[in-house]
Length: 78
View 1 (cartoon, rainbow, N blue to C red):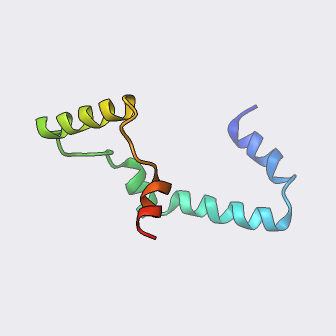
View 2 (view 1 turned 90 degrees about the vertical axis):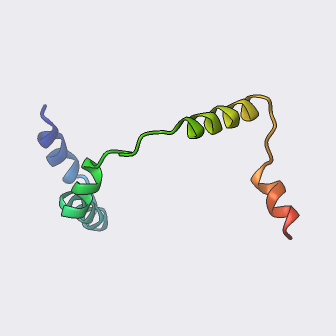
C-alpha cells in the first residue's frame, strides 16, 4: 500500500476536528517559508577550533558529573 493510500485510509477515521487540524498541518508543509527552512543546512558556518574545544570541555564536564541542574539554578535566583 502506498503512502497516499495509507493517508486516505487514515483520513476516513478522523473526526471533523482532527481533520481540520490535519489540514492545517498539511498546509504548513507546503508553506514556502517552511519548505525553505526544511531545506536549509543546519549550520553553514565552519566550526572553529575554539568551538570544538569548548564542546569537548562541556562533554567532559557532563561525563564527570560536573553539572548544575536547572532546578538548582532556579532555586539560586528565588
